[in-house]
Image (cartoon, rainbow, N blue to C red; front, side):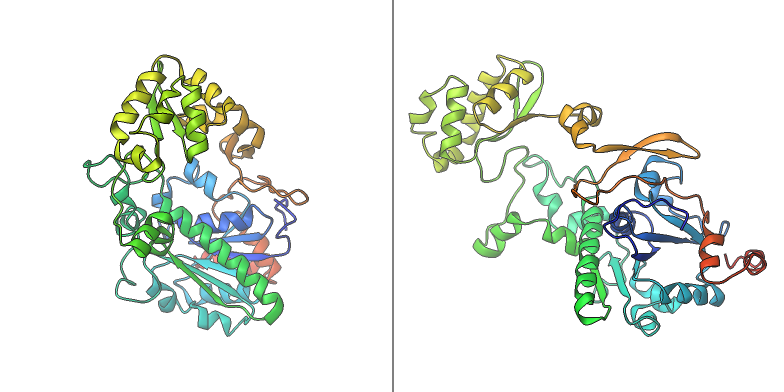
Length: 397
């Protein structure tokens, strides 16, 4: 393989990537960044517009999603293209797709068809709403899942109306959960010797991510509402004004509440009946927040972040994206990593948030050009230059 290894962690694992847009590529990125040999399968130029929603190939979004992969072109609408895919499946460990559920059956590349060729194959599918059920054939989109999954009903200021999250959280979580499912299936395969079908969806991911908000309803029947920047159950926790901006403060539990009061020079709040207990602080949230804001406005954000952390009270600045990557801790963690693109030159992409002591991940290669590795991959299957040229002439590859 011509591509340098991104990590030893998944070295030797071969993954066929039939994904597009965001949720699927997010999943496959988790495998590529940890050393899997990922072969991104794309339609030949001129047959399909490609990842329209992922932006142009050399734009930041595509570059961030598709690093550490090889690319081949393959026309899966042609029987000969499907035949080549099936030859790749014979040698593959994993296949990931996020077509609408009916597409794979129409192409003849569904799990049952490919498992008959390679019973050890881990076949992973991400959809909008699941592979079956009343909404299975609906097209999936992140914002639709955010709405149906309840997130937009609890995001934003009270009375503001539904608000989406600022990132495609359903897409991203579905991709990460799918990658987790693949790794679970690979571990199980070591015992059974058998592959299986891994499934998740944007809706499943979004509902799972409701977490404690969902539990409030499922256990106690409470329907959470918008709380704005205030934490729904831990008070005072939220966004507070300072002399030159805003900061986040998180006061959870009685001990931290006492530290907070002392750090602000308001020890009297500890014994004030309206603020003395968590229940009272909840009932008198607005009055308490106003008093806190009045104190914090007397000094700068940097002053209060330092003073509160020194006192053992969680507090932090509220950054824009440029400030995030300028932060010394973010730099120390290496969350922006360089790679050299043949088109863009040296660029920085978002690095993995997981650190392994012996087999770390790295950005070994930029995203491939369309079909950059077609000849190489087909040669691994036994196709010579003449055969590849013939396939190109007929737009099979």
